[in-house]
Amino acid sequence: MVLCCVFGMSGTGGVRSNQLASYLTKRILWVIPVLLCVSTAVFLMLHATPGGPARAMLGEKANPAAIERINRENGWDRPIAEQYVRFLGNCFIRLDAGKSFIRGERISKELARRFPATLELALAAIIIASLAGVTAGVVSAVRKRTLFDYAAMTSSLFGISIPVFFLGLLLILAFGKWLPTGGRIDVAAELRQVTGLNLIDAAIAGDFDAFKDSFAHLILPATALATIPMAMIARMTRAAMLEVLSLDYVRTAKAKGLSERKVVLKHALGSALIPIVTSIGLQFGYLLAGAVLTETLFQWPGLGRYVVDAVHDRDYNAVQGGIMLISAGFVAVNLAVDISYAWLNPAIRYDGGA
Image (cartoon, rainbow, N blue to C red; front, side):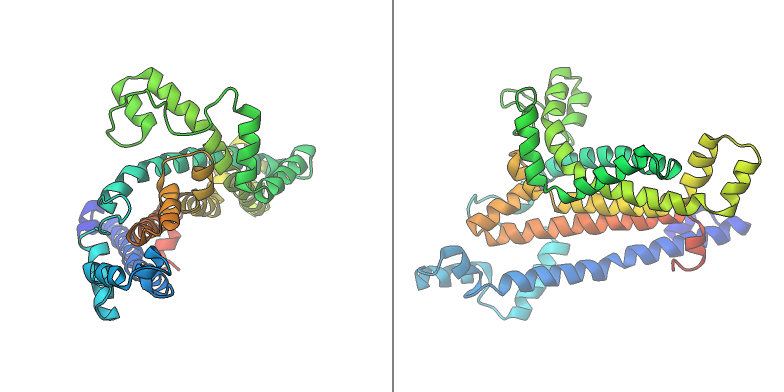
């Protein structure tokens, strides 16, 4: 009802608004079972550790009394069904993953402090990947079987094949003399956190030095992280554009005397947006979930590095909370992509979202 009121309900517009509201409602409701499945998988996998989570944290030679105490404090000595219900309540109602065994802090606060760093890195990487990938893909499709096409597709193949950590090391060796290779900002810099995104916070504060320093720290890790998504987006864009450019209406537009630029950008690219947006959305979700190597290599204080440290320290609650937040971010990105389809192609919401 709320969605219908937002979009209006008069005449044909009301019918379309109902269809759009129905489509959005279905996509949003699908998030619930997906998150339940993810949370169940996380709960079962971490509880399947030999000897239980307490023994996994304390080691094989741990004192039985210490294991019993930790199990009692965390409710791990209770029936598995009761633990599962409690875990769901912590995740979806209280939004609390408990305390870190190593740091003694609330994990939700630690995740809230680190997630903006991962988000800023992923946003910078996907912007680089999207601009370069879409441009290369469009030009390759328009100039099919030319030197540029062969060079772009060969480069994309190398981009997909080169491991992120190896490329990161090459970037550090090549540009480490001129650009920072670790952290988000100089340790001596003072920047008031508002959004947690350093570039935005520096712009809000009008601190040009902090903005420049944050931008310099972002260049190398964002470039390394953007390589694989850039290659994937370029190849997807080329394939989608080649398919659209062969359609009758595009040839008709060319026959009418429209400029090549208008035909390509307005008619062809507009029709090819759905697979391109899908590719960008999926790659952005992967960046949020898979920046572990990049964050570790460049000492980026983000969520991926936090989870890796928690696994190394056997911090059970921190691992669980980090994985759930990463999973929720990936699901949210996919939901945003699904919702964008309703505007990119209205026919999707008319046929029930098939």
